[in-house]
Length: 326
Ligand code: PCA
Image (cartoon, rainbow, N blue to C red; front, side, top):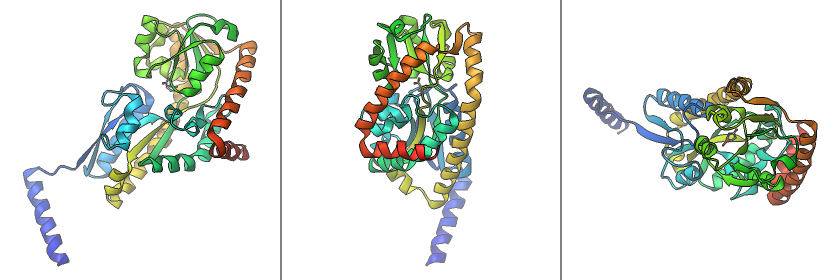
């Protein structure tokens, strides 16, 4: 019987090979950030790796810039099977569960090295929460350290008051409130226009995003605050994952590991490169002054307390686990 089945399979294979009609599965992969962004470049390499590694059994096709699903809709689309795989900012889900904001706690992990430790402490909890939501975590890559962008010189929190501030998660919106700014949530793919039209006049983000979106066309100052390093992650629908063969799962896992490693390095190398790019665009780039830094640290303490309260035991365990690695 076994022989008969494999004979049949071989015949079928020969038939499709002869007609060239063999087609594997196509996995559309929505991504929120522009194609030129290093996360999107990493995702494109990952997609190629899977397509080649599975011999075309699974062809992943990336759709950057929120072109298939907008950033805020990507996770739901994958949970519900509208898309099999995709990438999103992890802390973007803070509004569903505060624990997702572990990587946006001000001044907790401010270097790549510490960000890696914090991820190590948080990863099992993230995998568990995502699993309960019908999602499998494949890899995660940090953004470079977050600093403040303005269209004027800023030396204190008082200087920020009344400024329209572009936020990308709960933590950034809360930072705006605590500094007397006016938060407005805008996806990175849309910020160039928001700054050009005055819908927003400032933000906290990486040099990478400012560079990628050419914000020097509207903004003048970048203060290297190194507040935190938020992560993007790639997730796959659990049913889709379960349907993949063991061999293909192994290829995907291998490609994901490679993508995480390469993405990390891209992020590290992109930090200085993009800050220089902002300078070349005419912006003033440098560390925040002592006065401003001190005030931000105090606000950071308030935000840390608020987060610990909202994230409960699970959140506390992540922070404790991270501190134990120091
Ligand atoms: N860029 C993303 C998130 C963090 C970052 O550096 C953004 O601004 O949306």
